[in-house]
Length: 72
Image (cartoon, rainbow, N blue to C red; front, side, top):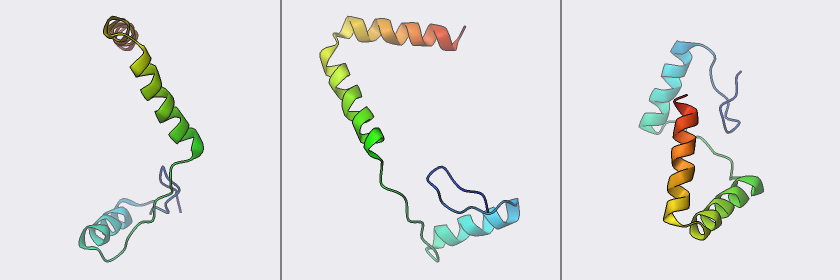
């Protein structure tokens, strides 16, 4: 059985997936999600600290550079 992004067991076929979504929607089954790892929490804290440290102009320049890379 394939695994979802957080390690959940997922059906491989589309009908099985639709049945699972229906069961989740009506509350017949529940998914237990993993807690975020230390790396995730650390990354989120680091991004907040970096955003607080940078000025508005620096954040704008970084965002423009990233957009230019995406649309290149």
